[in-house]
Image (cartoon, rainbow, N blue to C red; front, side, top):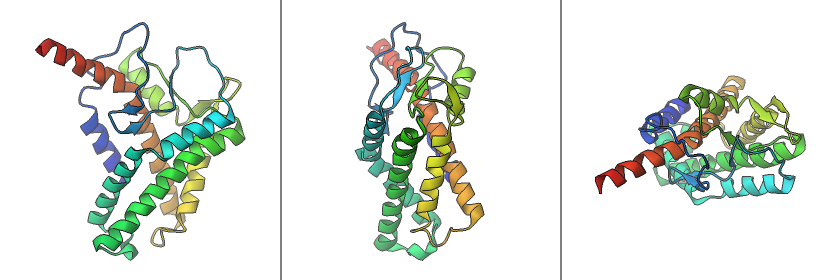
Length: 225
C-alpha cells in the first residue's frame, strides 16, 4: 500500500519528466525544492569532479532535509491516507487518531533522513549525496536514480554497496516499533524497510528529472507569450 502511494505521487508529479531532456552545457543552480516541496539539499551533478564532504556537512544536509517545512505537509498527507485506511487501528479515529498518525509519520521521516543522510554516512564514510546524470538516455538516467539506492560512493570516491541507505532505514524501522504496536512482526518490518528504500529511489527519480520538467514548462510559457 505504501508503494502504491509513492507510485501515484510519481505519476501525478512527473507528467513531463520524460518529454524533454535538459541539454544545457552548464546546469542551472540547484533548486532547494524539487517540484516545490521535495527537499533538494543533497543533489549534485555527477559530471562535476568528485570532492568529498565532511561529516559536519553530511549532518547539515540531514538536518535541512529533516526539518524542512514541506516535510510536515507530506506527513499530513500520509497521515490522512493512513486515517482513511485505518492503518494502525489502535490509534483510533477522529482528531486524536489523526494527530498520532501525523506525529508518527513525521517521526518516521525525520529519523530516516537523519540516519541515512547524516549519522550512518558519517560513521561508514559514505557519501549521502544524489549524483544526477542530467544528460544521457532516459532509461540510463532512470536506472542511475534507482541504482544509487544500492550503490553509492565512499569519501575516497570509490563505489560501494549503499550500507548507509539500508542500514539507516533499518535502524529507523526498528525505532518505529516503539510507536507502531500493530505492526511489529519481522515480515512487516521488512516490508517497511523495502518500501522506505523504494520511496527514496522514487525521490531520486524526481530529483533527476525535475530540471527537465521545469525546462519543459518554461518553454511552454515562453511559447505562449
